[in-house]
Length: 366
Image (cartoon, rainbow, N blue to C red; front, top):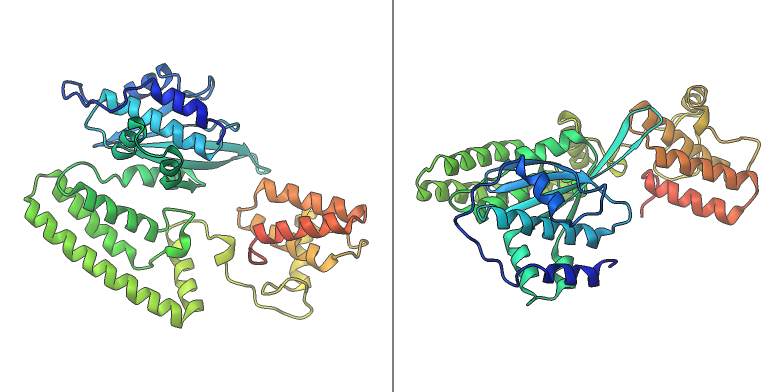
């Protein structure tokens, strides 16, 4: 942890236990960037941000400092959270979205968001000094998203304040994962989740319009029971029909315009002749030849026979991703590294680079 010592010293500058003063006015989205900058938590050049205030939550987006690791992101989120909660004690969660972006071959920007939630309980625990800092940081989760549309949906899915907040937050988080919102947990997608999401929205609206708590509790109880039953039924179906279950998950992702991860993409039916070399993914040489004309940068040098079938396989997968508009600049660079190793006959480097690229493309398991 790069900033462990520094962070402990930094937090000591704050009060040991938070004192929530009810006299503070509600914070506005326009005030948040000024507060963040004036707190001097972030390095210069990375302290500008945009924000959204949704009920008792504040969502912030800022550029990620490439010199900071995951522990740094968590510490920064806690310190930013405390700064905002000191200003407005009604805020219960501060979500900090760290943005990374790079220009791809198509000339557009690839965007990656890593977000960390700093809840009031976490901020208090960290500030008190009465808990193990490393253990607390380890208990915090990082979530990754790779497109702005998904991030907008994250902001809009705020639970908001009101009765039974903790219960609603727990169910909302469970539904968020089941809906494919968390791109690190897409194997947890429940294809029938939309009906539960609609019911969750109704429950949150009840909480926001001051409906009796007993009515909200009754709706939550029924929703939780039905969701538990649906998840159990889905897991049983997955166990008995794994290929059909994955096909339903993929269809859900496609219907909701969410990128299908490489490990969930269906295999291509083989035809003769075939390119062999890597298990469970095959394609015709005719398709390979057609795409080679369009994507020469992903066509291996056939005059170099070392691991040619495997090199053709990763080249074909990169062509397929390019056709779908989902090929990354990093994978393209890794393919160039593979070909460089092949040209100089470095078999060890070639095998290592090929295996790494095969894994990242979902051609072989991790």
